Structures are given as structure tokens and as C-alpha cells.
Length: 126
Image (tube, rainbow, N blue to C red):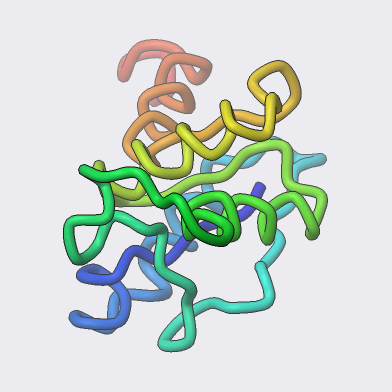
């Protein structure tokens, strides 16, 4: 799994470790969080910023596809983020690259819910 630092949560509000801690706690024992080349303050935009989400790019590679390719480069089978715009952009890139069968794009909230569901009810976890 890899994590995409969203612009507002990360670069604008310096929230880098908390999402990674949440993700690490949801990973199975054989799972690992791998970092892309550009993370933290140097994270690469998902492409939604500046209104890019609402128009087609007709020159060069789309930013969201470039970012998704960076996740593929580290061998991630899940790309997670904590921003709904990033989620949409990365999911779109997953489809552009025809990777829907091998790579999942998830919000970290989904990871938490899935982890809770596998641990049973609160009384069973006590």
C-alpha cells in the first residue's frame, strides 16, 4: 500500500504522520506501507487542484495519471488518500491505466471501516 499526501491536509496543514499511522494500524501482518518518491511537503499533486478535475487535458500526460504511475512504480496494490478529490482523481487514473483488477484506490476512512469489520463487534474486541 502507498499513501498520497493530499495538498490541503499535507502541504497546507502539515499533517503527514497521522494518516500514515492510521494506515499502518490497518495493514495486515504481511502488509507494508511503501512511500512514493514524492511525499510530504514535496508530494505530487493529484491533478484536482486549480479546477483541473473539471476539464480534459489535451496536451501531455494528465497529472492524475502521472501520480498514479508513481504509485505503480513502488509496486503498490492499494493507493490510499485522505481527500475525496484525490480519491476521484486517482480512481480515474486507475481506470485510464486499466488497473481496476489489480490496484485499489481507497480513502483511509474505508481502511478503518474494513479493519473494524474484520475485528468483530466492540464487545468481541474487549
